[in-house]
Image (cartoon, rainbow, N blue to C red; front, side):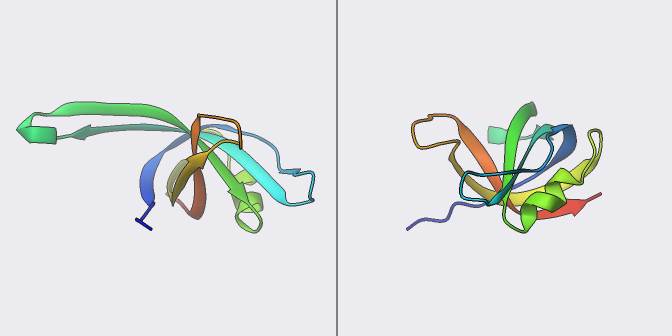
Length: 98
């Protein structure tokens, strides 16, 4: 199995309230707005994106406690938003407030 790890910094654009899955697992969701300059192939390029963050179990209350407008750095893995979804989300396993 290959690695699936993503690290990203940005500002939280939206933070949804903590909820529970049908199985009773704590779930939180937010949108991270990222802006940076990257240099692919020697040419400077602006990288900006909004990424859906999800957190579960012990990480969920930590994400839900954040405020919109707060700068954070997150790490986690990419996975589909749901079983039938083609949309990718970043499931966070680490969260650091800046």
